[in-house]
Length: 161
Image 1 (tube, one colour):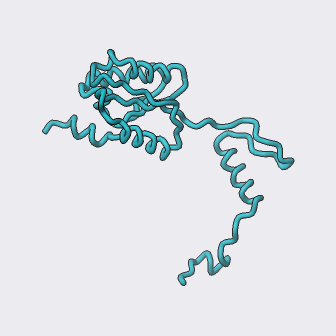
Image 2 (cartoon, one colour):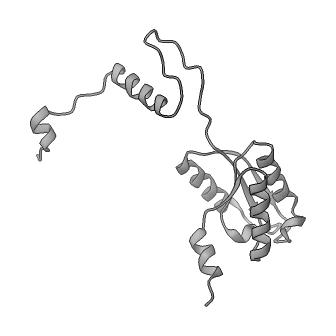
Image 3 (cartoon, helix red, strand yellow):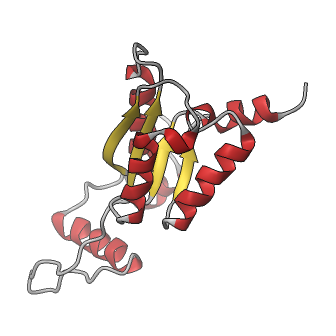
């Protein structure tokens, strides 16, 4: 068995006690601006809310959007985000201004129900750069941002070949 320098000096690591866990949680809370528990055991007064995003998907009426939905959900989970809802447009890739689902997603940001519109690919917003940029500006004007999962794929499509 290989021993590390710290084990040779201090022995094997001991399991954390409940007091140690409470101290660590209070340190993390204090670093994030939350009032830590007092020594008398009173409960925390404030909580930090998780960042919320709305998932936006667009496809043909018969398209299976299960995989893109799952990718968005998994992506949000890795960032610690919660999902405010999933909005789908099922009329194909019409221009963005004509899609009610996209407008609903932007409204959720404007209403502060979500801080971002999360979508798996740039083409679900628009393959046309001017249209995409206009939607990104609308989301930003509403107080949020547009988050694309496949940024590398979107960038490679935009590069001249």
